[in-house]
Each structure stands twice: as C-alpha cells, then as structure tokens.
Amino acid sequence: MVEIIREPKFEKNIKKIKDAKLKKRVKKQIKKIIENPEAGKFLKYRLYERKIYIPPFRLLYAYDKKEDKLYLIDFDNRDKIYRKKK
Image (cartoon, rainbow, N blue to C red; front, top):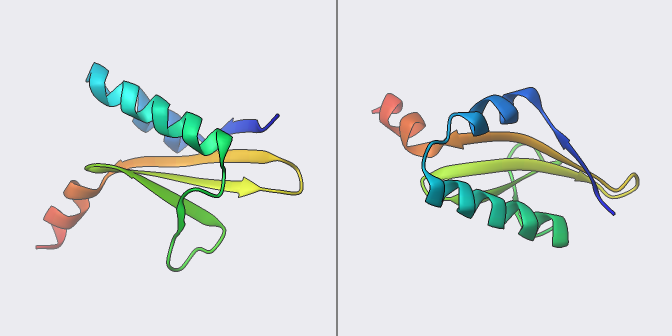
C-alpha cells in the first residue's frame, strides 16, 4: 500500500477549499493518483514532480517508487498566477 505524505503547503491550500464539488473532484483525483501514481505529467523543469489538473487548479505530487511513497506537494490556482503576469 502506498504511504501518503502531505506537505505543509498542500495541507494549507487544501484547507482553504470551501466548495463541496471541488473537494469531491480533488478526492477523486487523489484516489486516481493512489491507484496509478504515474498518471500525472512531469513538470518541465522538475522531473521528479508530477501534475494533475483540476481546472483551474493544479495538484503537484511526487512518487518514490523504491519506497512506495506518494508526496502531495501543492495545490494551487493556476488562474491567479497567470493574471499576475499580465
């Protein structure tokens, strides 16, 4: 069984979710990752981290195959990042 480790940044951002539908979608995607940790796409410059989109959010995680550990790294809103750049 995969050991799940939640990073503090992930915990902080997940607690901010108020929308019940979004919480359900996040749980569904986390279950999908647990079943198949290699489901997400690699980040461009961090090849050990993967991402899964839950529009407009992005869930970042890493999987250590040798130790069978899943690290939930971050959950952030991509729209906020793009709006700041414009």
